[in-house]
Each structure stands twice: as C-alpha cells, then as structure tokens.
Length: 458
Ligand SMILES: Cc1cc2nc3c(=O)[nH]c(=O)nc-3n(C[C@H](O)[C@H](O)[C@H](O)COP(=O)(O)OP(=O)(O)OC[C@H]3O[C@@H](n4cnc5c(N)ncnc54)[C@H](O)[C@@H]3O)c2cc1C
Image 1 (cartoon, rainbow, N blue to C red):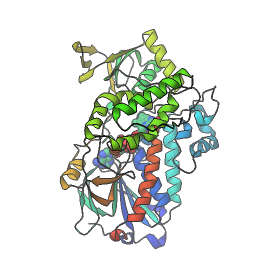
Image 2 (tube, rainbow, N blue to C red; image 1 turned 180 degrees about the horizontal axis):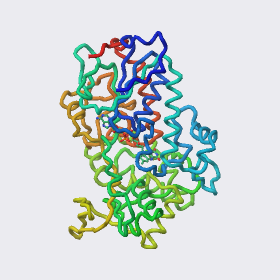
Image 3 (tube, rainbow, N blue to C red; image 1 turned 60 degrees about the vertical axis):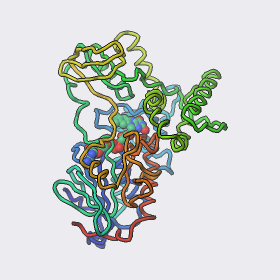
Image 4 (cartoon, rainbow, N blue to C red; image 1 turned 90 degrees about the horizontal axis):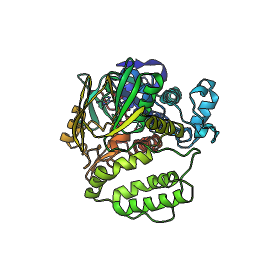
C-alpha cells in the first residue's frame, strides 16, 4: 500500500480521528465515486482506493482497452452534474486533444463530438487530482491488493479484507464493475492476420473490428453477435430528448409497443427515433420498478439485446464504416453462441448446429457481467449484507447505490455503477454513474453512523 503524502494538513495527521472510507475498484465508477466524495463529503476523511489492476493507478479508467472511441458525445460526459459543459471546457482549454476529437462537420460543435477513451480518462484523472488537491483534510491511500471480503465489524462499521490483512471502515463503496481485469481482450491481438474473429455485438466489438481492419491487423474479420443485433447509429447532429406527453404503459409489452409506435411516427416525420429512445431511457427506471420479476426475466431474455443495440449507439462515421465493411465483405457478421475459444479459432453454436470457425486471431469483446461468484461477492451474500438481484446482473441497490437486502440495509455499504444494473437500468453509463456518485456521497454525509468519526483500524 502506498501512502500519498502531500495532501493532508497537520491537524488531520491523526488518522484515527478521521472517517474511514474504502472504494473497491479504480475503473471509471471508482474514480468518479472518489471525486464525488472529495467534492461533497464535508468532513475530514481517510480514503483508501483498492484495485490490483496496475494501469489505472494513473487514472486510465476507461482507456484500458487500447482506447476505443467512446460512443457518448462530449456534451454527455461531464463529471460535474452542475457544470454540464465541463468536459467541453476542459477539451477547449487544452489544444493537445484537438486531434483526438472527432467532430462531425455537419454538427460542427465540440459538444457533439466523440473522443477516444484515453482523452476522457485524462480528464477524469485531472479532475480527481484537482479535487484531491482541494482537500487538505483528506488522506488518500492506494492499495494494489484485491478485496476478498467485506464483513460487518462487531463494534460498527465494516471490515475490509485485502492482501491478507483486515481493516475497519465506516463506509465501503463497491465499484468492481465487470470484475478483476484479465487482459482477455488483448489476447492474441499481436501481428497481422488474414482472418480474425471478434466476439461481441456491442459498440466495443464493432470498434475493435474496424480498428483491426484499418490498422492492417486483419484482412477479414468475422464479427460474432450472440443475438445477431449490432449497434444502431447516433444521428448526425445530436438530438436531445424528445419528451412524450403520453404516459408509459406499466407492462413490458405495453411499454415497448408504445416505444415502437412513437419511434415509427418519428421515423415517418423524419425526426429519427433516437430522441424518442432518449426519453424512454429516462423513464425506464420507473417502468423497471413496476415490472414483475417474470417480466424482468422476459426483458433479459428477449428484449435486452435489441434495447442495448438502440441505447448504446455508434458515432455516425463509425456506423457508416461498419456498413461499408459489411457491404464490401471485409466484415462478416455471424449470429451464434461461442462455446469454446481455441488458439486457432472458435466453436460456434448456431441454429444450424455446431461449427468451427478458424482464425489466426480471436478477440473477445463480449460485455461481461458483474463477477458475482468472486470471493468478495460470495462473502457478501453469505453474510446477508447484500442480495443478488433476480436477473443475476448485480446486487439490489437504491437510487444512490446503497445496498439493500429486503427491508434491511447497511447505511455505509454501496454498490456503484454497473453493479446495480438489476435495480437501475442504464446505471452502466457515464451520466448515470456521475449522478449516482454524487447522490451516494450526499447520502453518506446525511446518514453517516455515529462511529464514523474515526473507527480504529483492526
Ligand atoms: C471501452 C469502453 C467504452 C465505454 N464507452 C462509454 C461511453 O461512451 N459512454 C458511456 O456512458 N459509457 C461508456 N462505457 C461504459 C461505462 O463507462 C462503464 O459502465 C464503466 O466503464 C464501468 O466502469 P466500472 O469502473 O464500474 O467497471 P470496470 O471498468 O470493470 O472497473 C472495475 C475495476 O474494479 C477492479 N476490481 C474488480 N474486482 C475487484 C476486487 N475484488 N478488489 C479490488 N478491485 C477490483 C477491476 O480491476 C477494475 O479495475 C464504456 C465502457 C468501456 C469499457
């Protein structure tokens, strides 16, 4: 564990007098949570950021996969919910980033542009460093060990187990996203190949396939989408939210019928379905809470792939390149379930039976889900501190990310970002994670247990 030395004032050096807060995971969600705490939690505190993944000590966050293009526009990526144009202002203040910004000539403005993940990460990390510098009453530590368990401390607070040690905290923010990183995406990605396979039907898989072709890394790519769907495009010029005055039916079938009708009307009058979808997403949280468990399961089984392909959209230029690559035969799209990945290809299960697809390179870009079978989550479930949601997407949380277990909840335990996908649809996206991080930091400040004024370690 490394002590970051320069950020605490003499009066705060007595660490036993500080509230102790752990953030588990230093991906975007963990870093965002830390920023929100630094900006909102108005008491001196001792912050420990846990993550064994080495490359994000510098705040690389989203950029870990060779910096794909983010599929959200600049205008939607501010880490400050009040200063909505903070990211744009940051970009404009530093000429170094101009080259990486893909501005649509038709739309013209930086607000509507798309940027690679590394630029966004640099912004997040700079804002984190500034927030830390602004807090002379905060001690921050970085731990390079993974967290293997979180348990109640008999005298209040939570014990966090990592690196063979146990430490007591007033609050723990789980931000473990898609689990420990294993470098899986980069496996076999070196050298040029005649045939490459990219597994995944999301924006990240498409981005990876296009970059392989553009760099000469592959002459042909087979893109395997389990559902057969690929991401839809953003509009050329950014649309906002087209607010509907019609109430959303409270059944899955009714809600999606209403969405389809509204989208068809928008397509017919030329305004495009994207604005309608943006509105639907804002109302999806309320719809989700009203669905029965069976309807939620049906959503996961039948609707989620098409919903995801319309909410996670490709920048228009990238979408055009995808269509061209498919039309020219440079990309072949296959629908099927990958049963096995070998060094020389994959075993694919299709409606026509099992098939072997040969390739010199296979890159797995499937969207992972939270690793609920890790020692950390097994410990949380067996102690009753957290409860798996019925779709196995994560754990039950309230809007601020606080973990709820039936009627029970522990005020100091939060599961942030994608870990709450079973309770909050869309909580895997930057704007939603930003809002949640501030809500969580405020909730902690309001409900902090009495012991929080400095639990002793051990
Ligand atoms: C390539 C990419 C592009 C994206 N583009 C966009 C976009 O344009 N717009 C948008 O809104 N969203 C985008 N997203 C989605 C959104 O930002 C993600 O939901 C977000 O990155 C999730 O981050 P996370 O920190 O929760 O999880 P992760 O990125 O998975 O990070 C989790 C971290 O926790 C660590 N960890 C796991 N288990 C433990 C443990 N037991 N102990 C300690 N550490 C642990 C891991 O090592 C990892 O570093 C993108 C995501 C990716 C990956």
